[in-house]
Length: 186
Image (cartoon, rainbow, N blue to C red; front, side, top):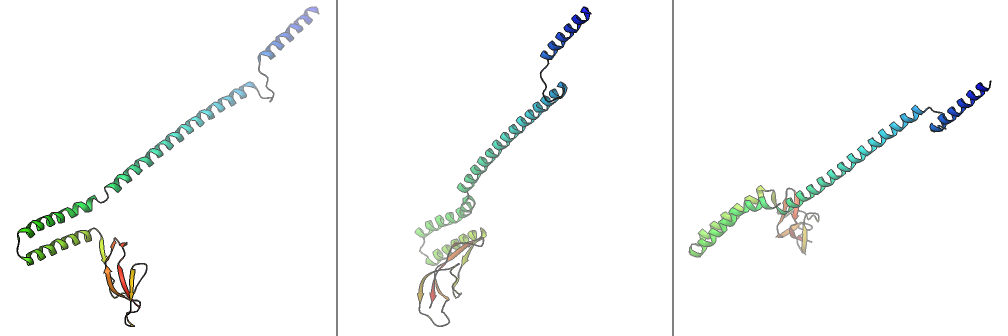
């Protein structure tokens, strides 16, 4: 009997030692479930780190894209008039030749004819680029389109109408870039 008591005491000591080595599990779950949860936490933490990395890279890529497009836009603004200026260069060359001929020519008619040709060439060049003349003589005055610089006494039919155009207006691709300056009748 004493041996049994001694064996029971030894068994209890072994059980106590085992219990001390095992972590306490207050939730009533077994240790394998806790290891499983730790693995899930590690997996979710890794996924979170991966998503944060993707977010940072995407954010940096968008910032680089924004900077690149801003730089391209600034470059475009600097060289926006390059095409039209290239088209006008032949007209400037014609004016240079005309100036040389004016110095040595005695014929006024030839000078006038040459100037008209150069003017027509310049006008067709800018019209091909979308520039259109606004010539509103005789139309009703519209303050959205016309700029009145004077009113003069006119006939009853001329009241509210444009009598004279002091400065022509121009539109570029249907957008007014210079309003015509007009005189209207009262």
